[in-house]
Amino acid sequence: MALTQNKSMLAWLDEMTELLKPDQIVWIDGSEEQLEELRKEACSTGEMIKLNEEKLPGCYLHRTKPNDVARVEARTFICANSKEEAGPTNNWMEPADAYKMLYDIARGTYAGRTMYIIPYSMGPIGSQFSKVGLEVTDSIYVVLNMAIMTRCGKAVLDAFGNENTDWVKGLHAKCDVDEEKRYICQFPQDNTIISVNSAYGGNVLLGKKCFALRIASYQGWKEGWMAEHMLILGLENPEGEIKYVCAAFPSACGKTNLAMMIPPQVYKEKGYKVWCVGDDISWLRIGPDGRLWAINPENGFFGVAPGTNQKSNPNALASTRKGTIFTNVAHNLDDNTVWWEGLDKNPPVNAVEWKGEKVNGVEYTAAGNKLAHPNSRFTAPAKNCPCVSSEFDSTTGVPISAIVFGGRRAKTAPLVYQSRDWNHGVFVGSTMASETTAAATGAVGVVRRDPMAMIPFCGYNMADYWQHWIDMGEKLGDKAPKIFHVNWFRTDDEGHFIWPGFGDNLRVLDWMLKRCEGKVDAKETAIGFVPEVDDINLEGLDFSKEALAGILNVDKDLWKAEIPGIKEFYAKFGDKLPAKLQAELDTLEAKLAE
Ligand code: OXD
Ligand code: MN
Image 1 (cartoon, rainbow, N blue to C red):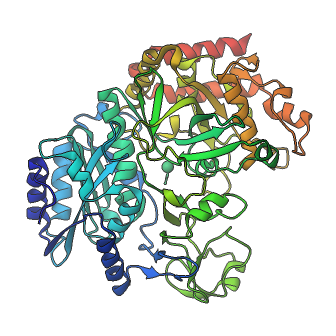
Image 2: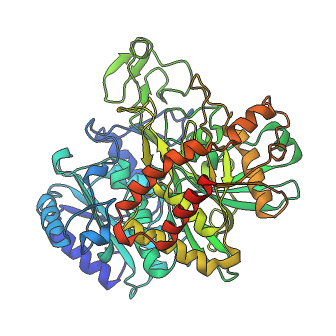
Image 3: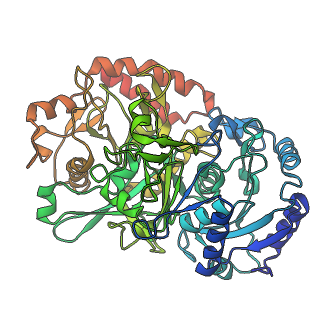
């Protein structure tokens, strides 16, 4: 029986039923009993493997098809009414053509299968920040992941009501998992997402990247708020005051690690604490007090497993010890647990590698093979995280003091700098870049622009998106958060990272928050404000002031060499580029020439 009488929802579901031709329809009500039944069913068909109940209670392993292990940006489309509305950084398809192609692919593919209907809320149920979606899927794996990553079930529909039409339609059809026919399409003007021929999380958990970033960024533009690819953390000082920070980094720059970091010993002893509100996405609105407030629309972490260990991120590891779904990690047959590269130095002898082949894990890894896929994942409930914020479920969110952008730059960007003002901060975000590393294929050290870490996730023309940032700054006025840029990745002549990173990044956050409170001066440079060497607390850290001075240094020649790349990138946007950003670029050029 339908869990809602909402007419717009029922009409769309009728359309989907007619299109997909399922044998059965199951509404996901959010109850533990129903989820447990589905887990059992998935284990009985081999879709999931139940792991050791003592060591990993309530945890499961799933393997995707080897052709389906990551987000597919080349097959991700923004189906806006015109190509210009999607902008030069998105793939575009004409909406009517896209619907026809996608419906032709999906038509009848639920035959002999069950259509699961997942009602879900991005954000706490009933919050002003939150938005509702329905995802139909033919995958139990999707249902069980969505049950971790979102608030889902009947309670969502009860709070939503029968007349409301502000919800997002999400159609997922696994089809044949054919990569030639794989499409991830967003229709921002129709609040619609269609994902076909994939069963990998980032492409099929439609609440996450597709809704909470691509559709929501467009909604935010139209409705006066922002959806950003940002973690949210709270830093508590010894007096018990908590200040909140949002941070955007491109992938592989340690967002989850920063969101859950453990303060260095000297800070811990003084009583500093870090609280995690979110590790991937922020929805930001101007609150009644005129400040910027943020919620994390998600309810779990979909984190990269390799490299997660007791040292790099003990809180993330602890989050995965119960109620977690692992995807494409290695199976340790000796004790029915999981393993991935970087968990520890002991790959299991008796292992099943991520594609499902039984191997001797020690020999296999010694020969240079990976037991876990490099993009293998854990889907873990946020409530498992030992440092989850007490504000995690707050319907009003947390007030943001600072926004941090970051990238991976071997030489150019200093450890940290502060923008002169909001618009300069938007410029800093819009020119954000990372250098490719030896870990990825292709040339090393190539600069990739990834404004606000939103290149794959902005649901409309990025020039309009920047203008929206500028407009939000105008509304916030002097209540706007301060904007900073960090680079944990400066290297020495041998290519070794200079700054220790991880928990010691708190020393840099500490400086930023002091800047927000006007408690510390800074040195003005051509690119913005840089700390005085004495103002970054190095207590308890074996790190010299000379080394710190080195990574705080702004080399004008290197920065001059940046300018052509920025100009080339900006040129893509033609006359849509906000004049205020062009002015910031001109100012930078002039300051570098001084
Ligand atoms: C993610 C990503 O999976 O940004 O969060 O790719
Ligand atoms: Mn992300």
